Length: 270
Image (cartoon, rainbow, N blue to C red; front, top):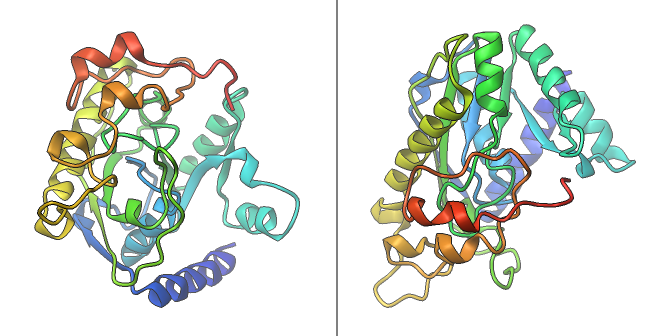
């Protein structure tokens, strides 16, 4: 199985190298080199999984990502996704994805989850699904929060959505936070809120690095409004951030007191 993953990783390194993208990992000591682990990451770009895997492989981990099921269209991509043991997620029927992820953890695998269930238009940590915390509570696997920033410069959402940016020399930071053990009797909402806070701390720490700040006077639609950028702020972004039913409204980050009334639920989970 991992022969396919190694081949895909090699192709990914070639693609990143062709663009001069430098993935800078930190906190690798928080990523167990063996055994089950859940990586819960914020989501800012279409290529986040590539960059997170590029960082995780430095500890020898092949991450099995939970990914939108529509990636599994008939063809070689679907075959490769299955061979790498990624997990298709159908929002209308998420139980199957949960059970597959649980089996992977039982086999000692690393499972990657984007609990925001989509890319945040505001580049803040938006509402979170409870699945990552539920898996940690049921299986006892450590839950490692992961912050990623810089990949939004390559390919991300926007109003309007920008085309992919092939500018060479981009830097992408991936940081692994301290692992958390979720107790068997833990409250899912409360633990998900704590996860949101940890992800916010990791993300804002990366966003404020000098390498990632906009130049003076730059119109930076790729940078969050509360830090001086020009992305939609959270109050505006809720118009675009379609969330599945059951998402936990933010009690973390900028504007957390105003988002809950405007949180827009996706009436047709996908």
